[in-house]
Image (cartoon, each protein chain N blue to C red):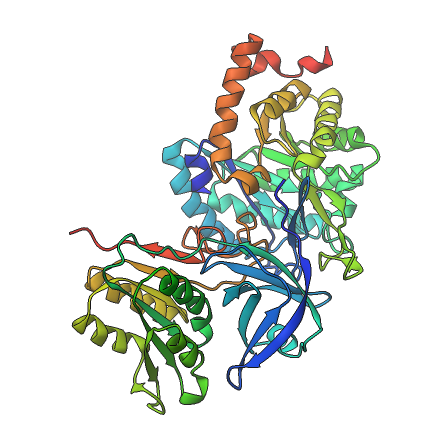
Length: 279
Length: 245
C-alpha cells in the first residue's frame, strides 16, 4: 500500500475486513479478460484483529508521504457491522469505507444490504453509532441494483459522510473447452475499462440524488477518465484495475495527465469542474 | 487489455521422477524465461502455480503434496488441463561468463533450475549444480543436469546418497574451492534463507525462487505478499545483490 502512495496516490483503501478471518473462494478467483478483470476472491481477509495491526503499520508508512488511509469493513449482520466498525477504530484510519455491495458472497452477505434501501440505511446508522464522528464514513454502493438513487438517498439520510461508487458489476466468463464458468464461484465482479461508462452514469445519478462527497471509481486508467469522473460529480477518484496493466506507476501518470488536461480545459481547481456535466 | 485466461492443453507424456514427483509434458509451448511460472487449472477442482521445467513443450515437475497435485498426478497422456501464463519475474543470467553459476535445488525445487541450467549452458556458462533431498529416493533430475554438462553434487539428510547433510553445506565447500558469479536457488524457504546468508557472507549475488499460495498471479490480489513484496509479480525470483564492498 505504501508503494502506491509513493507512486502518487493521495489515499489508499485497504482490502475489506470482517470480524473473523475468511479464507475466501477456491481458485480460480481472479482473471484478466479483454476489457477488464473479473474476480471472486470471496472477501478473503485475516480478520479485524490482524487487520488492525496491518493498518497501523501501513498508516505509519503512509503518514510521512501525506497519504490518507481508508479502512474497509464488511459483515454479515447489522450488529457485526457495528462491532467491526468499533474495532477498526483502534487502527485510527483517516476514513472508514463500508462495503455493503460485494456481489461475490450472495447468499451469505452483500445482497441484502446493497440492494435494499432500508438495509443499507440500517448498516450506515449502525456504523455511525460505533464510529461517533471519529472518522468520516464512506458507504460503498453496488451498481447491481435497479434504483441506485434510492439507495444513495437512504444511506445519506442514515448519516453517511460520503459515498464510494461503484463496486464491481456481477459477471461470468465461461471456458468453452471446459464448458463451464472459469471462476470457482461461477460469477465474479467485473472491473476495469469495460465498466467505466456504467460507473460514470452511477456517479452522475448519485450526485444528482444526494449532497455528499463521492469517491468515483470504475475503470479509470487515464487523466481523461478521472476528469470525466469529476465532471460526473466525484470529489475524489479511485483507481484499482489499472494497476494490473501498469503497476503502481499508474497513479503518478494519471495525476500528471489530469493536471495537463485541467490546464488545457482552463480549470484551476477540481471544485470548478466538479459536476459540470450536470449543467 | 492483456488477458490472463486459462487455455486448454493435453498431456503428452508422464514421467515418474520419484515416488512423490512426476513430470508432465504438454502439447503446448510458451515463450517463457527460467524461473517464470504458470497457473494450472483443473475445472471444478482448483488452480495453482507451478514452475516451468521447460517452456517448449510446456513441462512441469510436480510433487504430490495435496489433493490438487494428487489429481494432477492422476492425469494420463491425452487428458486435459488448463494453463495460464507465463507469469512472474525470471532468473537473470549475469553479465560475465568467466566464472561458473552455482545452482542449489532442494527437493522438487530443482525443476526451474533445470530450465535455467539449460539456458546457461547454451549460452556458454559453466554450471555447478547441488541437488539436496531428504533421502536417495527423493533425489530427482541428477542425470538430466549431468546430460547438460553440469557438475552435479548430491546431498541427502540421511547420507543415503551423495554427501550427508544439507545442500548449503555442499555449497559452502564448493565456494571454498571454486570461483562463482552467483548463487541460484529454489527449494524450501529455510534453505533459501540459508543460501541468502551464505551468499552475503561470501560477498556474492543470489537469486532465490520462492513459492506462495497465489490467486491472480499478476500482482493485484495481494494473496502472495511477503514482507511488502509480491511473490507473483516482483518474484517468484528475488534478486539479492552482493553486499557493497
